[in-house]
Structures are given as structure tokens and as C-alpha cells.
Length: 319
Image (tube, rainbow, N blue to C red; front, side, top):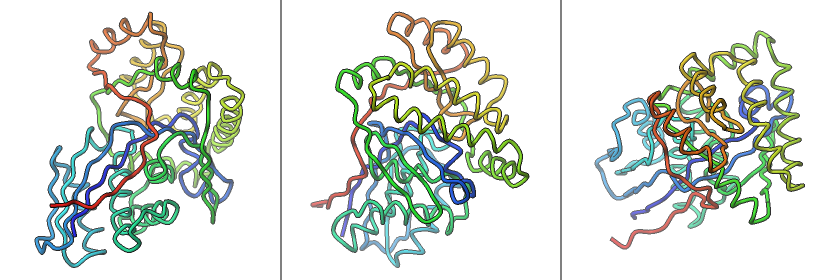
């Protein structure tokens, strides 16, 4: 049997950090994120005896080793190939998208459909327990559920609630969003390990509590139709994240954020764990081109994307 799949990346707006254990088990965490039209494409052949992985985008040995460990744990025979729109380690949930796809393949093979909650929990288990990597809980859920979501994480339960906003606000949100690749990738698990070490020392936890309160508040503002306040508070969230763990940024990134804000951006933050990856910028159309030009001089490149309701999808190949 040959299965093909698409698994989307995500942009996280608020709450990142509160989804990293042990915080959600002890205090409850939450995130707001939206799937985008970029993602990972994959194909698996369960009849192949090659036990091979073919990365059609860019060689990433540490990711491929992890994928092979998962596949060998699940299957006797397989040949898996995949293509990423963007490099892993870029802050858009690329690794979670890939591992979510593998869990979806497994679920679809057994049940002929994707059971979203079961598949997302399985993906989280594969990444954190089997591979023993450090990461938050939102990525696999964001990819498998797709769309615009408010996610709540507790010790024994994960709740996913769709966020519904008027079409005019969807259009405005897309028009004002600018995604710029900083030119820097990183191993997010190292930053998250540092995040966990800070938590274990009982340092700066008040900032995670504040991030959680802000995230819940911003969900309510979205539901009231207050998109502008949602956009403006991206800055507050980014500053809280840096106060909790200064390693999420560096001088080069701080300068990029400053350039964006000084040239008319309403708000600007790094996506994902931080210290590299992509800048998510909210800016009016009249300042957009100016910011793109300024950031390109600093080594950034624009990434064309759109917010999407796409979710992890699998279909049988007729080949």
C-alpha cells in the first residue's frame, strides 16, 4: 500500500512556552496558532523492504535519523520520501509537521481515516518519548487539526477550540501579515531545554503566568472582533518571552525587530522557540515595501504564504 500526505506548518501568535512541560501539567497552558498553506509533502510505501528515507528538500541528518527510528519502531517494511517547503529549525513547526504526518500514516493504515486527537497525541508521544527531544505540545496538534485554533494543555487533557472571526478580519489579518526568514536556523530543542532548566530552578515563572493570561485575553478580544488589539499585543508577548528566557533572541535578531518597528510595523516577533527562524511582522500596506527592503539588507528574505484551514490530509496513491 502506498499513501501520500500533506501536513501544514503553523504560525503561533500567543502562548508559546506555556505548552512546554512541566508547565502545562502543573499550571495548565494555552496557545493561539493558525495553519498556513506551506508544509511537508510525503509518501510512504509499506511494501518496500528498503527501509529507507529520502529527503527531497534538503539533507538534515538529525531529523532523518529521528524519522528512521520512528519508522523502524512502527513497521518492518517501508520506503518514505518527503519534501519540506522550508528548512527544519525555522520556527514554523516543521518537525512537528513531519512527525504528525508519520503518526497520521499509522492511524490511517489502521483505521482508514485520521482520528485527530488520537493521532496528535501519538505524534507527541513519538517525538517526546521515543526520540526524547525537547519541544512544546502545540506543533503536532496545530498541524493535524489545521485552521485557526485556541489550544489548552493540561496534565491529562488537550482541548482544541476553533477560533471563528468575520471574513473582513481574515482579509485584514492576511493583508497586514509579513513573514521574513532571518537566514538563521537553529535546533529548537536546545532552546527549549534551556527553557525547562529555567523552570526547574523556579526562575521567571511569573512571566509564563503572564503569557498565559495574555493568551486567554487575546482569544476573547478576537471573539469580540478586536483584531487591532490582538496585533498590537504581539509585542507584549515577545517581550514577556524574552524576559523569561533571554536566549530566545540575540543582538542580530533584536536589531531586525527594531528596524521593523522603527519603520512602521505595528508588531514583530520571532516564530517558534526563538534565536533564529522567521519574523512574523504585522504592518500596514503603505509601510510593507519599506520594511522588506530594510530587512533584506540585514540578510532576511520574504516568504510568501497565506493563512489556511488546511489540516494533515492523507490519500491512497493509485500507482
